[in-house]
Picture 1 (tube, rainbow, N blue to C red):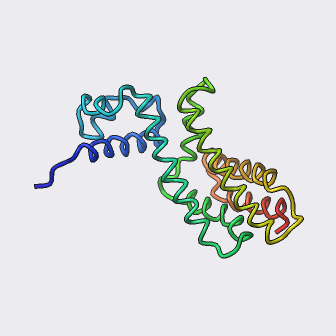
Picture 2 (cartoon, rainbow, N blue to C red):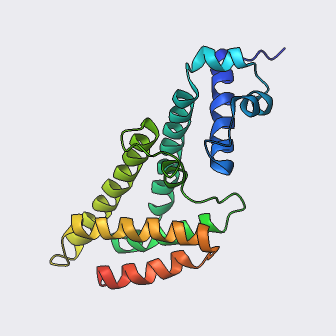
Picture 3 (spheres, rainbow, N blue to C red):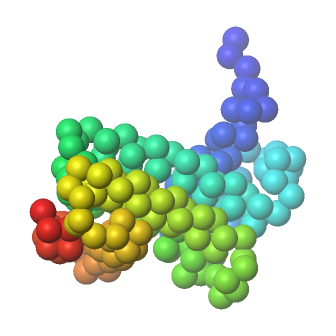
Length: 192
């Protein structure tokens, strides 16, 4: 007989929370819906998470780890630093074309909070910082192969705007070519 362990229950709760929040937002994801969708009791949820806010933050932190791992792995398949910079947008374009694309979970949930110090906003800021750090890493690798092509930190900040802009345009406008347009802008920015 397969017995569900406490870690399995916690993972189920986090999986369901993440999916519901990504699909409909924090406000639309009530505890009753979480209980029903996860197939666990309210008591089980509160055994692991003392508040809904704590649960939302944990689900977003988990998404951050998984999303960044996926993104870095996909981008890292490109053979050269320059190709990896352009692959940022190819990977985004593939994501935009996926059936479950609902934009950036971190931008979306940040829009539901007014306080810049809200834990959801803090997780979103940390996620964007990781994305920026990754872009800096890619820009430094590119510049080491092609010296004199710019400031990696400045280029990375501009790439982050292109990345988040493409995500937002793809979601709001339904424009799946936003990644291609952002990639064209990145080519000019990086002189590729």
